[in-house]
Length: 263
Ligand code: NAI
Image (tube, rainbow, N blue to C red):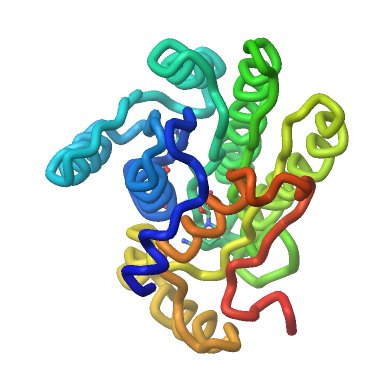
């Protein structure tokens, strides 16, 4: 990513934005990009130390953001994240439903409890974020806004060892399409990105998991560009979809995957 591209504006200056899962990886890159574009950002995560690190990094650049510690599986926490944006900035323009957990697990080793744990964050958490963000967007003066869900190539096509995670990401894709249709006439756009494998903290930890290094090698090779994506490359696609530059785009799931889904 060149500096010029990174500094390009998406017209998000002063927009009030909520990013969940902002302490790490794609969420952190997105919160940082939005803040650098002049947006007013609430960064939410259950990882307080990670959020503190993000605040410190941006502070060194003279940028401020509001942080909220909370768990997206809990309705009251998600309401608190949304309320923080409305309280701090007077409204909510953009919500990025990004928080997720990414287990690598085939059907035989996935327990019923594992299924529930993934669905709680990647399914229910994404639903709650859309629900309370859109409620705030609808209730405000000049109603409307833009939601971007973070789906995955695993939410668009089948892969091995994604027995619970893959179906959970289909929830993100499904929410995007259904809510886009339901809310289009009321000025709320709902889109998604479908990242390929991205070099986030989570993916780097695969190196220490059984079968992880082999999986990483295989999956990297399965991307036509033959490399992992960078969190910033996903953040730019999210910023575009969130912005007025995408004003006639809703219900879209934009692959950010080095050509993976084109095969
Ligand atoms: P990550 O693990 O680096 O970051 C995820 C963040 O979400 C962490 O800061 C974590 O604390 C937070 N989080 C997890 N559960 C939470 C909860 N219940 N409440 C609040 N915060 C919570 O992961 P990464 O890779 O940045 O993933 C972010 C999103 O991107 C996820 O939705 C994931 O499914 C999606 N994605 C990631 C890909 C990748 O290759 N890294 C590929 C495709 C999609």
